[in-house]
Amino acid sequence: MMSDENKSIHEFDLKLICEYFSTIERQGPGSPEVTAKALSFIDNLTGKSKIADIGCGTGGQTMVMANHAPGHITGIDLFPIFIDLFNANSQKLKLQDRVNGVVGSMDQLSFQDETLDLIWSEGAIYNIGFERGINEWRRFLKPGGFIAVSEASWFTQERPAEIETFWEDAYPEIDLIPRKLMQMQKAGYMPVAAFVLPENCWIEHFYAPQVFAQEVFLKKYAGNKIAEEFVENQRIEAELYYKYKDFYGYAFYIGKKI
Image (tube, rainbow, N blue to C red; front, side, top):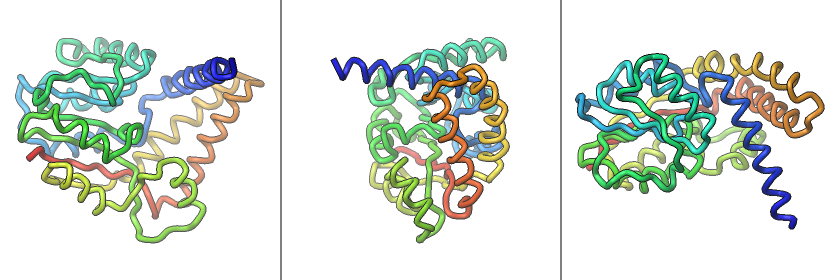
């Protein structure tokens, strides 16, 4: 009985969280410039290429990719609300012939082995963990295919306890950039590039749009404890970023399947 009750609370939680994030263009730090920059390291794409954007959200970065690269892109996300918005965006931009979203889980992808030219994932691989993701997804890539993911990373060897504790709790796999590159090498990729996302990816493209979204959300769910706690958590996360952004951020990692 208990487990059913908890499950429904958890589902309500997720529904609220999805609704919140569906109101902003990006569900994680990034920018059109950064998506284009990461794409510039990938040189094997043609009109026949098959690309997967895993954990695509509503497709903010996917549509940018489609405007900068040829090929067919499949966006995959666990949440139907995101995929509905993804496909609506694709139609609005007249990209539906080569960009479509499907509901699916990143730990149970339905692609055939060695059929993808590029696997993309911005700010989403943490859901199964960087190391597990790059290892498990590798088999779907053709030899010489590329993987490009953005991932939370430490910039310094040492950091203040407050931010260390926050991240150890939120995502224990956060690590230094050279260690991530070693994991990529070990997983069977040649590291092609790694670069740090500029601060505007967090501030202008992720945290600033949330300020208005939070007001609307709190008005709609006035008195709802779960909604209020969630927004409070988002605000704390933003404050920590402003305070400690010299110590961590996102880095893009691009590798080529050997």
